[in-house]
Amino acid sequence: MTTVQSDPPTQTKLAPGAGAARTQQIFKSLGPFIGLFLVMTLFSIQPDVRATFLSFGNFQLVLSQTVIVAIGALGMTMIIISSGIDLSVGSVVALTGVLAAVLMKQHGVSPIVALLAAVALGGAVGAINGGLIVALRVTPFIVTLGTLEVARGAAKWLGNENAIYAPHSWIDGLTQNTAPGGVSAAVWIVIGLAILVHLMLKFTVFGRSIFAIGSNEVASRLSGLRVDALKISIYALAGLFFGLSGMMQFARLSGMGDPTIAQGEELDVIAAVVIGGGSLSGGEGSILGSLIGALIMALLRNGSQLMGWPSYIQEIIIGVVIVVAVAIDRFRHRSAAKA
Image 1 (cartoon, rainbow, N blue to C red):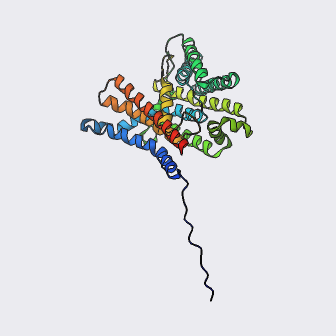
Image 2: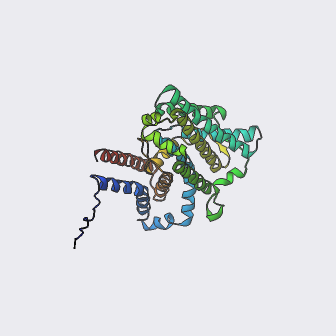
Image 3: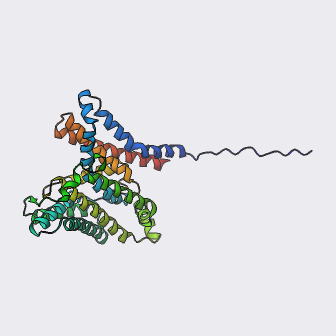
């Protein structure tokens, strides 16, 4: 009889560096959750603070405070994934809030028209940013630094350098904890928008194009993508979110449009995206991560206040967190390049 010898079982071998790359990917995915856990633990150590910090009422407050940055982070995530940046967020928030107040108080328009006009203005500013970046071939940092000043100046001009108090309307109730679940309607708006943007980034050609541009713009152009038009669309869409964020700020102030509000808010929005795993080098980022980053920012401020720490301590802590997040991102990219 002829004995048939079977081939020895094939063993699957990982390519050199594959294990390390997989570990980095897992850490990148879990990073925002680890950061959230560490923040929760930090402010739960002290017994007299723990009870208040972990209370349902405090979480209601934190979620309400997260809304403004979270909506801005939805737009900023798309921009950062495309390897861009937008420093005009805070000024756009102020400008759109003042516009809504002026329209409602001085021109008697309905709240819904004022809201739509404010969101549209945010989109227009975003389209201008994208258009200037494409037309002038100037880095987004410089262009949006300029529009930051222009939008802030326009807000002061529109409000005659004064806060404008609009008549009370249903908009004021968007940030009050009266919606199902004991949270504000704004929280549910954020969740709904986050789901839509996540699906757009994951399953549409436009969303995949955003990742492609951020990963390699030259290759994207060579593959036939209309990169310039896409960039303008990305900044315009993000501007709509910044305008909506301005309306949430308007609601939180009970219908007041303040041209001096939200100074430095662009840093909180960018920090939320970076803490959530977005890379300033482009090509990486997630909506869930950005929302967790915004929540971490809100919890840091809330916990610091409960601990009785002065505002400058809060600013130092947040600054350190931002630097650490960027440093981790850079280290991860260098490690991936070496592998």
